Amino acid sequence: MNRRNLLHIVALLLAALLSNCSRSSPSAKEHGSPKRIVSLSPAITETVFAIGAGTSLVAVSDYSDYPDAARQLPHVGTSLTPSYEAIARLAPTLIMTESAVNTAKSELSALGPTEFLPWLSVDQIVASTRRIGALTERADAANALADRLSSRLSTAEPPHGPRVLLVLAETPGKLAEVLFVKRNSIHGAVLRAAGARNAVAEDVPGIPRLSIERLIALDPDAIIVLATSGGDAERAAFLGDFARVTPLSAVKTGHVALLVAPEAFSVGPRILAFADRLTQEITRLFSAGAAQ
Image (tube, rainbow, N blue to C red; front, top):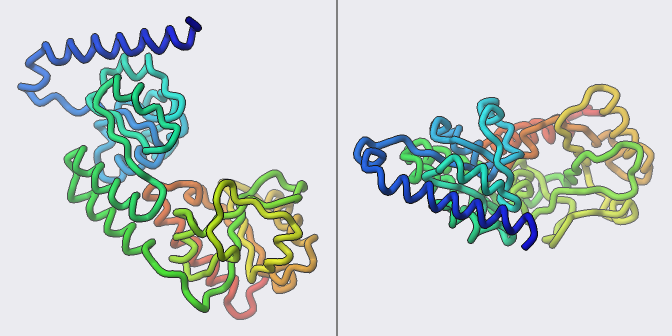
Protein backbone atom coordinates (compact mmCIF):
# COMPACT_ATOMS: atom_id res chain seq x y z
CA MET A 1 0.00 0.00 0.00
CA ASN A 2 1.49 3.35 -1.01
CA ARG A 3 1.64 6.38 1.29
CA ARG A 4 -1.13 8.26 -0.52
CA ASN A 5 -3.61 5.39 -0.11
CA LEU A 6 -2.63 5.02 3.54
CA LEU A 7 -3.22 8.72 4.21
CA HIS A 8 -6.55 8.49 2.41
CA ILE A 9 -7.69 5.61 4.61
CA VAL A 10 -6.51 7.40 7.76
CA ALA A 11 -8.47 10.49 6.74
CA LEU A 12 -11.65 8.52 6.19
CA LEU A 13 -11.28 6.77 9.55
CA LEU A 14 -10.73 10.11 11.26
CA ALA A 15 -13.79 11.55 9.54
CA ALA A 16 -15.90 8.63 10.72
CA LEU A 17 -14.63 9.08 14.28
CA LEU A 18 -15.42 12.80 14.25
CA SER A 19 -18.84 12.13 12.77
CA ASN A 20 -19.62 9.55 15.47
CA CYS A 21 -18.50 11.95 18.19
CA SER A 22 -20.79 14.62 16.77
CA ARG A 23 -23.75 12.24 16.68
CA SER A 24 -23.10 11.11 20.25
CA SER A 25 -23.14 14.66 21.58
CA PRO A 26 -26.75 15.91 21.91
CA SER A 27 -25.68 19.45 22.70
CA ALA A 28 -24.59 20.09 19.11
CA LYS A 29 -28.13 19.61 17.87
CA GLU A 30 -30.09 20.69 20.90
CA HIS A 31 -28.41 24.07 21.15
CA GLY A 32 -28.23 24.76 17.41
CA SER A 33 -24.45 25.01 16.94
CA PRO A 34 -23.48 27.09 13.89
CA LYS A 35 -22.88 25.50 10.53
CA ARG A 36 -19.32 24.50 9.70
CA ILE A 37 -18.99 24.69 5.93
CA VAL A 38 -16.00 23.80 3.77
CA SER A 39 -16.06 25.27 0.27
CA LEU A 40 -13.82 23.67 -2.35
CA SER A 41 -14.68 26.13 -5.10
CA PRO A 42 -13.65 29.79 -5.36
CA ALA A 43 -16.99 30.61 -7.00
CA ILE A 44 -18.93 28.95 -4.21
CA THR A 45 -16.80 30.69 -1.59
CA GLU A 46 -17.47 34.02 -3.27
CA THR A 47 -21.20 33.27 -3.42
CA VAL A 48 -21.39 32.29 0.26
CA PHE A 49 -19.80 35.60 1.24
CA ALA A 50 -21.95 37.55 -1.22
CA ILE A 51 -25.18 36.33 0.40
CA GLY A 52 -23.96 37.07 3.92
CA ALA A 53 -23.12 33.55 5.06
CA GLY A 54 -19.34 33.90 5.17
CA THR A 55 -19.14 33.34 8.92
CA SER A 56 -20.31 29.76 8.40
CA LEU A 57 -17.17 28.90 6.42
CA VAL A 58 -14.40 27.11 8.30
CA ALA A 59 -12.18 26.41 5.28
CA VAL A 60 -11.94 27.13 1.58
CA SER A 61 -10.18 25.86 -1.52
CA ASP A 62 -6.57 26.66 -2.31
CA TYR A 63 -7.63 29.10 -5.03
CA SER A 64 -10.18 31.02 -2.96
CA ASP A 65 -8.75 34.53 -2.60
CA TYR A 66 -11.87 36.70 -2.73
CA PRO A 67 -13.11 38.46 -0.72
CA ASP A 68 -10.19 39.29 1.57
CA ALA A 69 -11.83 37.36 4.40
CA ALA A 70 -11.45 34.16 2.38
CA ARG A 71 -7.67 34.57 2.45
CA GLN A 72 -7.73 34.34 6.24
CA LEU A 73 -9.43 30.93 6.32
CA PRO A 74 -7.63 27.58 6.21
CA HIS A 75 -7.05 26.36 2.65
CA VAL A 76 -7.73 22.65 2.21
CA GLY A 77 -6.97 21.70 -1.37
CA THR A 78 -9.37 21.63 -4.31
CA SER A 79 -12.30 19.54 -5.48
CA LEU A 80 -9.84 17.46 -7.52
CA THR A 81 -7.14 17.21 -4.87
CA PRO A 82 -8.73 17.77 -1.45
CA SER A 83 -6.67 17.63 1.71
CA TYR A 84 -8.70 14.85 3.33
CA GLU A 85 -6.93 14.98 6.68
CA ALA A 86 -7.31 18.75 7.02
CA ILE A 87 -10.99 18.62 6.11
CA ALA A 88 -11.67 15.77 8.51
CA ARG A 89 -10.01 17.61 11.41
CA LEU A 90 -12.39 20.53 10.88
CA ALA A 91 -15.43 18.25 11.35
CA PRO A 92 -17.55 20.09 8.76
CA THR A 93 -21.32 19.87 8.86
CA LEU A 94 -21.37 20.52 5.10
CA ILE A 95 -18.89 20.38 2.23
CA MET A 96 -19.75 22.27 -0.95
CA THR A 97 -17.97 21.96 -4.26
CA GLU A 98 -18.60 22.14 -7.98
CA SER A 99 -19.89 19.03 -9.69
CA ALA A 100 -17.20 18.19 -12.23
CA VAL A 101 -16.22 14.95 -13.92
CA ASN A 102 -13.06 14.50 -11.87
CA THR A 103 -14.38 15.72 -8.52
CA ALA A 104 -13.49 13.29 -5.72
CA LYS A 105 -17.15 12.59 -4.98
CA SER A 106 -17.02 9.35 -3.02
CA GLU A 107 -14.02 10.43 -0.95
CA LEU A 108 -15.56 13.79 -0.04
CA SER A 109 -18.92 12.22 0.79
CA ALA A 110 -17.14 9.94 3.24
CA LEU A 111 -15.95 13.00 5.16
CA GLY A 112 -19.41 14.42 5.74
CA PRO A 113 -22.57 15.71 4.02
CA THR A 114 -21.45 17.00 0.62
CA GLU A 115 -23.27 19.10 -1.95
CA PHE A 116 -22.04 18.85 -5.55
CA LEU A 117 -23.21 21.93 -7.41
CA PRO A 118 -23.24 22.20 -11.24
CA TRP A 119 -21.49 25.40 -12.28
CA LEU A 120 -20.94 25.58 -16.04
CA SER A 121 -23.86 27.39 -17.66
CA VAL A 122 -25.83 30.46 -16.60
CA ASP A 123 -28.84 28.30 -15.74
CA GLN A 124 -26.69 26.00 -13.60
CA ILE A 125 -25.06 28.88 -11.73
CA VAL A 126 -28.42 30.50 -11.08
CA ALA A 127 -29.89 27.25 -9.75
CA SER A 128 -26.81 26.48 -7.66
CA THR A 129 -26.84 29.98 -6.17
CA ARG A 130 -30.42 29.39 -5.02
CA ARG A 131 -29.39 26.03 -3.59
CA ILE A 132 -26.55 27.62 -1.62
CA GLY A 133 -29.07 30.04 -0.16
CA ALA A 134 -31.26 27.19 0.99
CA LEU A 135 -28.31 25.32 2.52
CA THR A 136 -27.05 28.37 4.42
CA GLU A 137 -30.45 29.75 5.46
CA ARG A 138 -29.88 32.83 3.29
CA ALA A 139 -32.57 32.09 0.73
CA ASP A 140 -33.75 35.68 0.26
CA ALA A 141 -30.27 37.05 -0.42
CA ALA A 142 -29.39 34.09 -2.65
CA ASN A 143 -32.57 34.37 -4.67
CA ALA A 144 -31.97 38.08 -5.18
CA LEU A 145 -28.44 37.36 -6.42
CA ALA A 146 -29.69 34.54 -8.65
CA ASP A 147 -32.28 36.87 -10.15
CA ARG A 148 -29.58 39.44 -10.96
CA LEU A 149 -27.40 36.79 -12.57
CA SER A 150 -30.26 35.49 -14.67
CA SER A 151 -31.48 38.91 -15.72
CA ARG A 152 -28.02 40.16 -16.68
CA LEU A 153 -26.55 37.08 -18.34
CA SER A 154 -29.47 35.19 -19.90
CA THR A 155 -29.47 37.23 -23.09
CA ALA A 156 -29.47 36.33 -26.75
CA GLU A 157 -26.58 37.30 -28.97
CA PRO A 158 -27.29 40.69 -30.60
CA PRO A 159 -27.70 40.08 -34.36
CA HIS A 160 -25.86 43.25 -35.33
CA GLY A 161 -23.39 43.61 -32.46
CA PRO A 162 -19.66 43.96 -33.16
CA ARG A 163 -17.68 40.75 -33.62
CA VAL A 164 -15.39 40.70 -30.60
CA LEU A 165 -12.66 38.25 -29.66
CA LEU A 166 -11.92 38.04 -25.93
CA VAL A 167 -8.37 36.83 -25.37
CA LEU A 168 -6.76 35.76 -22.11
CA ALA A 169 -3.41 37.43 -21.50
CA GLU A 170 -0.47 35.05 -21.57
CA THR A 171 3.27 35.68 -21.83
CA PRO A 172 3.87 38.80 -23.93
CA GLY A 173 6.31 38.55 -26.80
CA LYS A 174 5.35 34.96 -27.63
CA LEU A 175 2.22 35.37 -29.72
CA ALA A 176 2.06 32.11 -31.65
CA GLU A 177 -1.58 31.39 -30.82
CA VAL A 178 -4.26 32.91 -28.61
CA LEU A 179 -6.36 31.48 -25.81
CA PHE A 180 -9.85 32.92 -26.29
CA VAL A 181 -13.26 32.93 -24.65
CA LYS A 182 -15.59 30.50 -26.42
CA ARG A 183 -19.25 31.32 -26.83
CA ASN A 184 -20.39 28.10 -25.11
CA SER A 185 -19.06 29.24 -21.73
CA ILE A 186 -20.22 31.48 -18.92
CA HIS A 187 -17.86 34.18 -20.17
CA GLY A 188 -19.33 33.75 -23.62
CA ALA A 189 -22.65 34.67 -22.02
CA VAL A 190 -21.00 37.77 -20.56
CA LEU A 191 -19.86 38.83 -24.02
CA ARG A 192 -23.43 38.52 -25.30
CA ALA A 193 -24.69 40.49 -22.30
CA ALA A 194 -22.18 43.20 -23.17
CA GLY A 195 -23.83 43.64 -26.57
CA ALA A 196 -21.32 41.85 -28.79
CA ARG A 197 -21.12 38.77 -30.95
CA ASN A 198 -18.37 36.24 -30.43
CA ALA A 199 -15.91 36.37 -33.33
CA VAL A 200 -15.74 32.57 -33.10
CA ALA A 201 -19.33 31.88 -34.02
CA GLU A 202 -19.43 28.14 -33.35
CA ASP A 203 -19.34 26.16 -30.11
CA VAL A 204 -15.83 24.96 -29.31
CA PRO A 205 -15.04 21.77 -27.38
CA GLY A 206 -11.94 21.55 -25.22
CA ILE A 207 -9.32 24.26 -24.81
CA PRO A 208 -10.17 27.24 -27.05
CA ARG A 209 -7.01 28.23 -28.92
CA LEU A 210 -6.53 29.94 -32.27
CA SER A 211 -3.49 30.01 -34.50
CA ILE A 212 -2.44 33.40 -35.84
CA GLU A 213 -3.49 32.24 -39.31
CA ARG A 214 -6.97 31.40 -38.02
CA LEU A 215 -7.12 34.73 -36.18
CA ILE A 216 -6.35 36.60 -39.39
CA ALA A 217 -9.00 34.59 -41.24
CA LEU A 218 -11.62 35.42 -38.60
CA ASP A 219 -10.64 39.11 -38.64
CA PRO A 220 -12.72 40.25 -35.62
CA ASP A 221 -13.98 43.81 -35.33
CA ALA A 222 -12.25 44.12 -31.96
CA ILE A 223 -9.81 42.19 -29.79
CA ILE A 224 -9.93 42.65 -26.02
CA VAL A 225 -7.13 41.09 -23.99
CA LEU A 226 -8.16 40.21 -20.43
CA ALA A 227 -5.58 40.41 -17.64
CA THR A 228 -5.66 40.23 -13.86
CA SER A 229 -3.10 43.04 -13.51
CA GLY A 230 -0.79 45.19 -15.58
CA GLY A 231 0.67 48.65 -15.81
CA ASP A 232 1.74 50.71 -18.79
CA ALA A 233 4.67 48.42 -19.64
CA GLU A 234 2.53 45.29 -19.64
CA ARG A 235 -0.17 47.04 -21.66
CA ALA A 236 2.36 48.11 -24.29
CA ALA A 237 3.80 44.60 -24.46
CA PHE A 238 0.48 42.83 -24.88
CA LEU A 239 -0.91 45.30 -27.39
CA GLY A 240 2.39 45.36 -29.26
CA ASP A 241 2.03 41.63 -29.94
CA PHE A 242 -1.23 42.21 -31.79
CA ALA A 243 -0.06 45.42 -33.44
CA ARG A 244 2.45 43.34 -35.38
CA VAL A 245 -0.38 41.29 -36.90
CA THR A 246 -0.98 44.07 -39.42
CA PRO A 247 -3.58 42.32 -41.62
CA LEU A 248 -6.12 42.51 -38.78
CA SER A 249 -8.88 45.09 -39.21
CA ALA A 250 -8.96 45.62 -35.44
CA VAL A 251 -5.32 46.71 -35.57
CA LYS A 252 -5.98 49.16 -38.40
CA THR A 253 -8.99 50.71 -36.65
CA GLY A 254 -7.46 50.84 -33.17
CA HIS A 255 -9.94 48.34 -31.77
CA VAL A 256 -7.41 46.32 -29.77
CA ALA A 257 -7.43 46.87 -26.02
CA LEU A 258 -6.15 45.44 -22.77
CA LEU A 259 -8.77 45.24 -20.02
CA VAL A 260 -7.30 44.76 -16.55
CA ALA A 261 -10.16 43.11 -14.71
CA PRO A 262 -9.51 40.48 -12.02
CA GLU A 263 -13.26 39.87 -11.92
CA ALA A 264 -13.03 38.59 -15.51
CA PHE A 265 -11.46 35.41 -14.15
CA SER A 266 -14.27 34.69 -11.71
CA VAL A 267 -17.36 32.57 -12.24
CA GLY A 268 -18.85 33.79 -8.98
CA PRO A 269 -20.96 36.91 -8.38
CA ARG A 270 -18.11 39.19 -9.48
CA ILE A 271 -18.89 38.16 -13.04
CA LEU A 272 -21.68 40.74 -12.92
CA ALA A 273 -19.07 43.46 -12.40
CA PHE A 274 -17.12 42.04 -15.33
CA ALA A 275 -20.22 42.25 -17.54
CA ASP A 276 -20.49 45.95 -16.69
CA ARG A 277 -16.78 46.57 -17.28
CA LEU A 278 -16.88 44.76 -20.61
CA THR A 279 -19.96 46.68 -21.75
CA GLN A 280 -18.18 49.94 -20.98
CA GLU A 281 -15.04 48.85 -22.83
CA ILE A 282 -16.90 47.78 -25.96
CA THR A 283 -18.86 51.03 -25.92
CA ARG A 284 -15.61 52.99 -25.60
CA LEU A 285 -13.93 51.13 -28.46
CA PHE A 286 -16.76 51.75 -30.87
CA SER A 287 -17.53 55.31 -29.87
CA ALA A 288 -16.83 57.89 -32.56
CA GLY A 289 -13.13 58.68 -32.70
CA ALA A 290 -12.10 55.94 -30.27
CA ALA A 291 -8.55 54.83 -30.81
CA GLN A 292 -6.06 52.75 -28.87
